[in-house]
Length: 371
Image 1: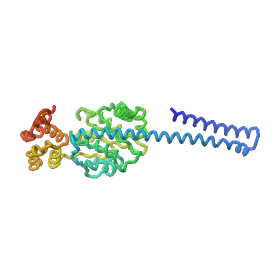
Image 2: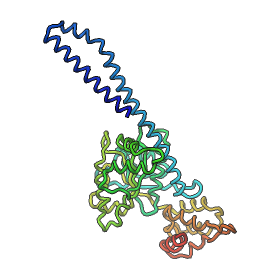
Image 3: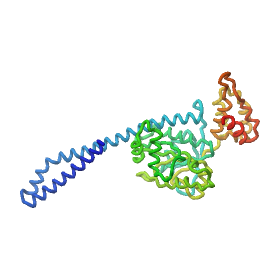
């Protein structure tokens, strides 16, 4: 209210000053009360007042910008804390994570510039910062690590030594909640507010979105529709609206995650995020899986048979079943579980080898055990 009042007073003051000047000059000329020069000299003392009005308005604008910067800093701290917790949930106990790799999938047209052919989780920030414009689509199969890569990007952008104070705050939200009849900026502001209402008001969130101080990291385009066969109507419309989302410098920065099958279905309809780089997460290799299992297990000797199988048959059923971070994390969770009273292991990893196919390993042993 104070800032708005100052602007209003300033505008009224300047208008009145201008009107008084015009009126004085008109009267001087009309009634010949003095020469124009004398009238102008008489009006000179009013100039400091006009300057003060201008200075007050400028100060108000500076204060408003400082207030926006302060709100952006509050949001950045809140996002960093929330995403650090999310990463801990995704990778499980400890700081063990697989350095996932990905491949750039060039579209027929409208690709972002600066995309390298290959990349990995640990350099996702640099990869993204090289894109012009900064628009990225992360694809991969279920459990491939799309959300984990998005979380790493968010945290990396917030902690990058190259970060500029005016850089937008990356905020990850679920696309499944977007009613596409709701304008993107309104929905985005509402999502920011709902996630961080203990730190920001809805008006604060709206201001940050309107000022392009928020970088939308939109997770789960594939979750907007139940199956490609239904036409992917919501995802189709969402991409159209995202392509229309503009910043002062042009296409606004955006990050989107989507399952490969769903995104390729949309691309075949010639509907995709324009001026973007699409990357696809690679399968976890047998060597990566073995390294991860060894690091996550309390007693690696219990996993010897499994590790030997991964080494001797890197393309075998077990290696194929454990080719995603989600399945690996789930396997360790299940086979490292202990009895709360005796502390004895409830299952032995060798049971993984008794199942004949990747689907059986995933569904029969892992999913049913914890489901």
